[in-house]
Length: 276
View 1 (spheres, rainbow, N blue to C red):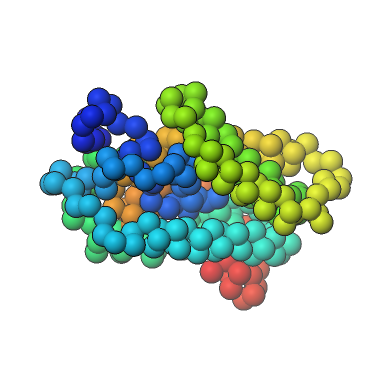
View 2 (cartoon, rainbow, N blue to C red):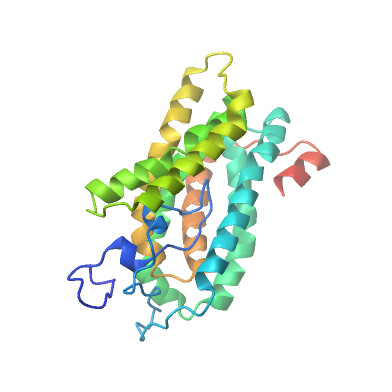
């Protein structure tokens, strides 16, 4: 893996040493089981496109990362409530998501241009892989998640979705030979328990919707695959460039879907406000 540079004594890079990826959007927040491992003395930041010597993170970097992750999770958790209102207003899943990513890209692309030390180098190093991942698994994981929200209470969908940290621990163990620490296992257990307790009052599936059930069950597995692939690229791009590349891929995917199934726009000012 020439894109990674790891200090000895590790002969090959391990994800516990490379460190956590930047948060992306989602169900887009990149958060895997291996991120719960204790900090490794060999962890290095993502290399700049110029491949200059890495700069160690400053004091409090992990505290700030945890705070940003908590804020991002809170914001992502509020999205289904707006989506449900848009569904009731006549929009379908693909139209809602196309609007979501189009609006986000209007903000992300200028920030990416402003903050990137070299867009072409970042695209070659990571952007292309993130774009393709967004175009395929990114579209799949967002569609299954929001299609499930259309059929079931969001608390039920969230509870099932949070099976994915358990899946990622298994991926780390059996695909990357990273033995999870007990603290990681305990943290994942607390995450799932908290999500289950939050959704407990709504844990009933009501009328059977076969497509909705399939999307509900598929969401954590598709998202885990999406995370596993995105992880190797996110460390090689600055945050706004990485997020823009993923959103470009997902946005293009929904443009293609809308070309075949049509586009439903908001019908009134309140619906436009919810979309924004």
